[in-house]
Image 1 (tube, rainbow, N blue to C red):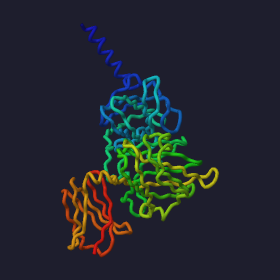
Image 2: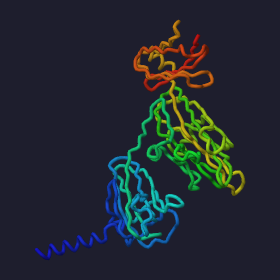
Image 3: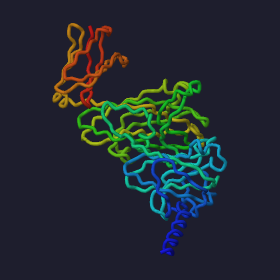
Image 4: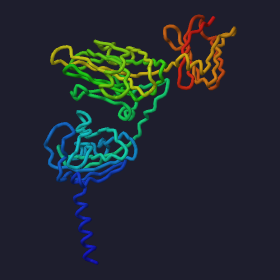
Length: 416
């Protein structure tokens, strides 16, 4: 009995010493903080998924298996690691596959030029095991890392507004394809554009510098579109100069039935702009953003993606152009004539300058615009019969957008 107990104890001690030293003995972790001891594992992470090449002599291995679709953040950017000798310079590699047949999914060496800790985001599918490997390329000392799991919100309804303020939703809901394979593609970013207002952040998606003709794609989450209905797409964009050269960007908006390059190029083009330069100074590139619009009427009902296709080129051979920035986009739906006949929507302006709205379905919202496109009034609605007081408007012609469930009807009316 004593021999068996001793043998079991020795096995446990041996496993504890070798745990996380190889892929095969990777320790399963959950959301929260994990402490990594000295990086002295016998299996050096390979292939290398982070910058700065070979040079590691040891590794430590962990695994994570989510039970739902998640955006996972792995970070050592923690107060307890900052400035600690032999703990403030880390490098991480994220793999899919099996031990002995691993594929790089993501990786990171330095967060910034002056921050040598590591942080990486990746989309994790339910039931799939992901391997997290740290090496001693720079330091072999111990440190802590956090695993943060968040569920993206990919639901779409009309009217839809996206302002790129969630890195989780961007990672989990958008599809990015670096077709030119130059390592630079669409990303989500938050940045204080005006250095005089460091606490005022702008959110946008950007496709950055390149040294040759580029071709990159950003696919939105899927929208369920109905045949015969019209969908209005509006977005705000600008160029931005870089240290290597001024912006010289091209963009095309397409509507595709799937999130692949073949789907995009077989889709319908609804907007193009070429030779996009920086409009305004850098601090005001959002305020001075351009507006692009396009419409799409599908002949078949189904799921569709709106696609931002970037094909800007440098100004000279071997040069580097600037950036293309997209700050937001909206998608509105206008029902077909047959659909609106089913809803039985009607409106009229009475002698007291009241805009009367009726429908056999509940009205959700009305927005009024002048003919310059300026919004003059917005009101939430909740019943099938609504009255809007327009006495405060000047006499003239106005546009109204009425939302009924997930549809939008646009019409003109006269205020006397």
